[in-house]
Image 1: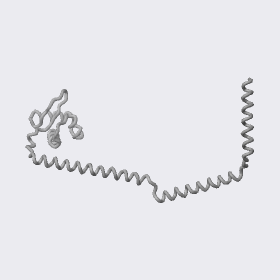
Image 2 (image 1 turned 135 degrees about the horizontal axis):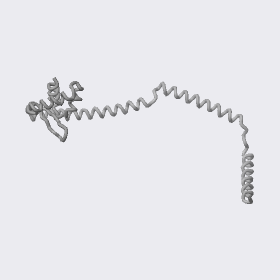
Image 3 (image 1 turned 90 degrees about the horizontal axis):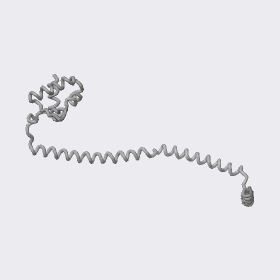
Image 4 (image 1 turned 60 degrees about the horizontal axis):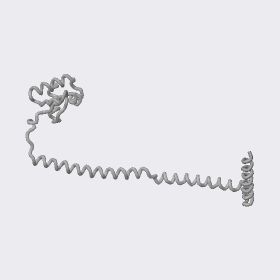
Length: 168
């Protein structure tokens, strides 16, 4: 029944829940109203405790059914938790370093890829060298005297243009 399922769930989880949370955590196996009614029934029987916060009610199992725990057992469990936490931190650090190392390895080229890239770039370089040679051999070279004459003429024409511009 819904009451047994709700009680078993609350006892297993051993923490407070609202009716909606219990309904959704039971994967809608029982209807919302059935869960609500069984919670109210269990609370009226005294099997679980009910705490009202404003409009919402929270339900939790009675703690006296779990019995008392030994302080030594609690300390032992706490030390196990801290040891496991430290181990977890160390493992996370090693994971982080190994992941960064893996990223570095994956980002570098393999030997095969590097050789292929090198041959491709060598072919490109050879092609550009041939093109440069053909350009150098087919063009007319301007002598320094011709170059100076062209610059002088250009300077003279610019000066003339500026004079004419002022006159206008």
